[in-house]
Length: 108
Ligand code: HEC
Image 1 (cartoon, rainbow, N blue to C red):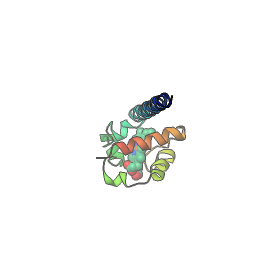
Image 2 (cartoon, rainbow, N blue to C red):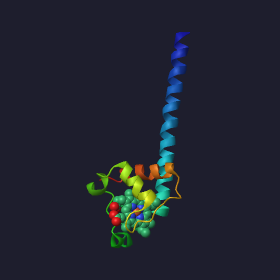
Image 3 (cartoon, helix red, strand yellow):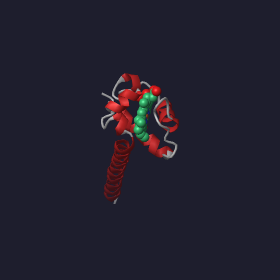
Image 4 (tube, helix red, strand yellow):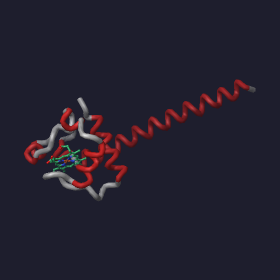
């Protein structure tokens, strides 16, 4: 009988792990899509900055200069804008959180 419990427990745990991994992969893809549609025009698909973005003063997301900024600072810049960076108040807080997490993945 005990073996059955162990087997069921193992199965449930494995399923939970697979499910949470696929959910976070999904969230990351959604953020990547959002970044590529709304942000890449200035920041480039890889975050290093397009020609337009660099002219406006965007910094390379892969460098320590941007990566050393806190999540709160990045969130604030995206939400409220900064210099020539437009504000994205229309985005949901969880979308912005996803974008910040996506920017973290661009670190070299
Ligand atoms: C019209 C061009 C433009 C678009 C579109 C744009 N940005 Fe920016 N972004 C900028 C500029 C210019 C700065 C630099 C602002 C400053 O420091 O004066 C900046 C700064 C930032 C920063 C702070 C790091 C830095 O470079 O100083 C973050 C984070 C950021 N943008 C994220 C985003 C995200 C996420 C989006 C999409 C939702 C986005 N940006 C869309 C132009 C843009």
